[in-house]
Image 1 (tube, one colour):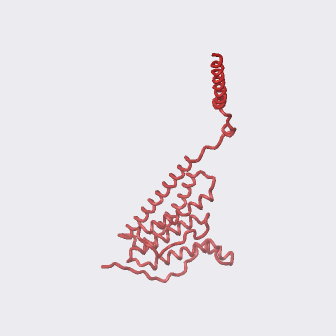
Image 2 (cartoon, helix red, strand yellow):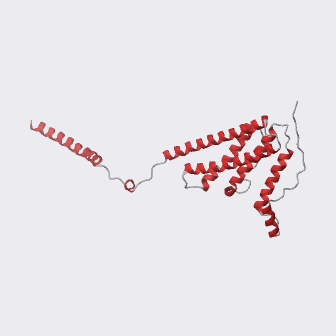
Image 3 (tube, helix red, strand yellow):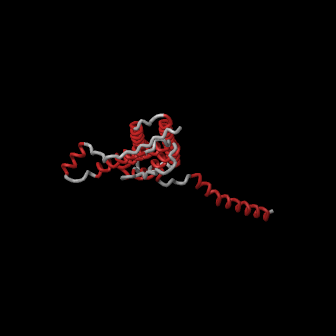
Length: 237
């Protein structure tokens, strides 16, 4: 028997926090862009949580994906602007599919991150990047779990799928980091050592080389002299 519960509720517009409301009254204008974006984000998450169909196991993972990518967006905003990652909701929402998209969409920014931090130690730069996207992912998972807990549905298969998705994301990040560190080490080993002042000075040809070159004409002259001497000896005989 299907245990399908569909939540359909009319959501009132979210009330701005006291600090934001006070600043709005003082300014006599609309909320600041950052505050407005945060309010819209909260409203979007709440709306998604209240319209999700709990009976379908994929729907909570769709919410999880939205929340996780939103968290990563927040973490990357400082360097890549708003909506760095465009959420792709209408796709495979299994734990494997959800984790795969979280990993691929977030790690895809590493190339741009490298360009923005050119000149830094590659290993430390990778550590900083992984800390950034992991922090966003952790925040997203926390928010999704809080929402599902508030709906009293974070149990059974739903809880198992959320946990499995989290584990797969962690593994995906670990595999990505290991591959990048291996590539960085290989590139470092292949890079020639910078020239020193001694090595920069053109080397003087070794004496042995000059001697070898000089021997050739000398030997030729000696051979010719031997032939002449032999001819002269024959003539005197």
